[in-house]
Image (cartoon, rainbow, N blue to C red; front, side):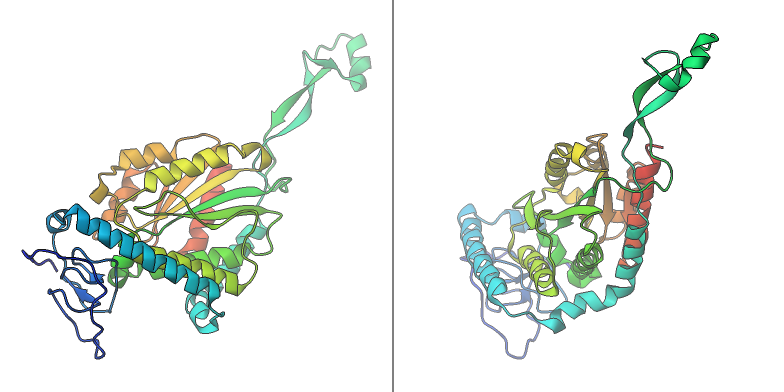
Length: 368
């Protein structure tokens, strides 16, 4: 719901805590209020960071947000960064919380097993250099000497790149880069369609499913928001090995969505991943980028043709987008505008394994 404030901001602050957690609309007093100003909440302006108290959100217009003076925006940014750093310290020092982790892990256990079955069946994609016989030029094939004496011309062999046979085992690991959306809109609209919870479940699913497949899959997870195109959550050289490490990762993702400034670096993040993976192509069987996004791109003037161009940036790196959130038909419109097989809409994490399987299959078929 939109509302007009028409009131000036003063300076960012956390605000008072309402012990009864009653809804507060407008004003500049309460933490967790909506459509107000100065305090931490949702839908307002001039506050230091987002704070969801689970109430109906009243939203001031973008024009009002844009009219906030720069010195107030800077003060809010500094307060937000301070709170973010304090939250990261708490995450690093906190004990493992089995209950919190299971909230994201338990709903996707069937999907974890389904994805592990898919990973077990992965096959080779990259071409191999092999001797090709029965050629009319090249090196003389010693096994064809008699045929040469009687005038046969196809008695040579040469080294060529050969596509793998269907079902051929991998000789090199596959390289995956998951790009996750940790922008402010993920937190802001989580109560609308559960997009952030869905993304955290998807990340837990991927991390659990890939555990033990280090010889087949080398992966990393990076985040993008209005502040950065590459926030490293998982490095391919050091993937998480237990639930405590996995919990820390999704906590950091959640924290960034709450404290980051508004903006979008989706295209820059995909470009960064392309450059990184392209430099590593020869070391892996194939390289794939999977972008998770909430489809909130039109607000930042990111047209479908721009996204298409960045997904097709390199022939050596296959790129795909999975839209896990949508205001109205944003995600459907984006998917229809992308080349066939490049975009997927997923509003339920149970569909993630099938989508990843489609991505692997389309990547293999593209070279056969």
